[in-house]
Length: 447
Ligand SMILES: *Cc1c(COP(=O)(O)O)cnc(C)c1O
Image (cartoon, rainbow, N blue to C red; front, side, top):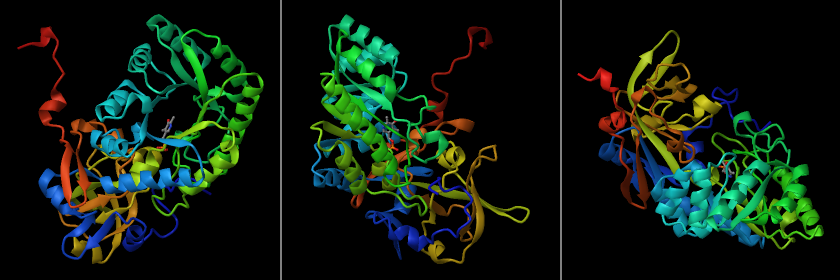
């Protein structure tokens, strides 16, 4: 029922107007074309070339405020930690950090990005199933808020490292509640067969053991059941209910549980999925964990950043194949991998006003990369688009640029932040020189 919308969908696609209607950050201006806030996307493309990512600062702030508001409304003592993996751009992190968001990081690089963006160490949580010793050392020397440990083996590593450094790590145990969030198999994380967390039945003994280990202060529990959760908040409620039971039984053993990290995963409507809203999530937290006197955290990535970003691409050419029209873009799966990786559906809108109202016909939208997986959409209703026409991929602000690669030796695309009627380059397009930098021929090949 709530499986991710596949690339090729049986129902008619939403119209351009329907796509815009639920995305107030975008509008079609009859003269300037598709606008992100007050900036025509054509201006960004003219200034910085394509493919180019554009993020709306206002949308990032509005969505963060909506989440913070929903949590406050439900009378929860909760902090929002942005999942940096969704979008690690420094300007995005600064925008969110300035409005009080902390950061959920899963690598040294993300920890450094959050700090470089000005997010205080005291607002940073380190998650992930395989933190290296170097990463644990960095987290301890930065004295971050919390490390979420995912196994007994990792708890031992953290204890030994912290003790050797003369530090105390604040550690939460990430438990695997064995619930099915009914999301795409590649992004479900809360089932017992997934690699994440500690089986909930093993958690009490490990938590008790942790309390006696040097270099560790157990502070609570963490959970994250999956990403792009659109099947309502039932799975959250079940998982949080299990966590609440666990908090009570740990306390009954005389153990201290101060915090529960509720994870991320709130889905967004890419196509027409019935996505749960922050108020429903806050309600699920309040109903289960609300009266335990624990400090709470949530770690959304996609819900905040996804709708705030677009990927603007140019048409290279329109190719008439055997019974099929192909729109070949200058963006490819190396830029936006979600369609190839998760069969994800992204709205694709023409940017020019005349293209927006022209008659539609089915087209396969593809990139120039040498594999069939480099397909963004099949049978999508789009106008005839001449070379150099612009199109915008919607909801590309999360797991977009963050998942880009240089496959086919294609440089990483530029990123732009839009603030009202202003915009600025926040990451330059990778140069051809940078693509080759760092490579060396072995001495015996010199000539
Ligand atoms: C990926 C991840 C998140 C964020 O997921 P979204 O679906 O983007 O909200 C939060 N916490 C952890 C531990 C994650 O791995």
